[in-house]
Image 1 (cartoon, helix red, strand yellow):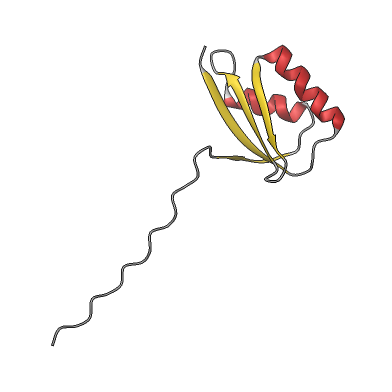
Image 2: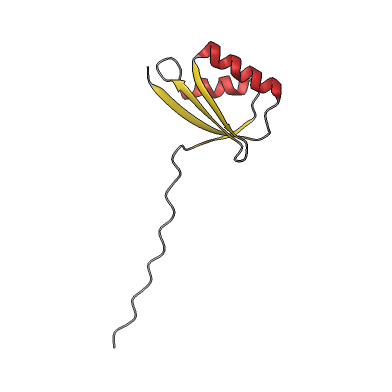
Length: 91
């Protein structure tokens, strides 16, 4: 078994019906864990990559009724480096 995580930002708060549908999808399709961050409006899905791929997981989550706005990287990009300051001219 190969465990993989994928992170989605959702557009609208999930209803109780959507949460029940996601729970059922986890039982049937091998999605191992769902973790919601309501403040950031994200859901992290852990799944078995030997049985599923990212496209299938996305389709399952959407089919459950969650309004996915975008897929986010798990590792945030590094902050931009500050611009180099020119050296003063020597006289």
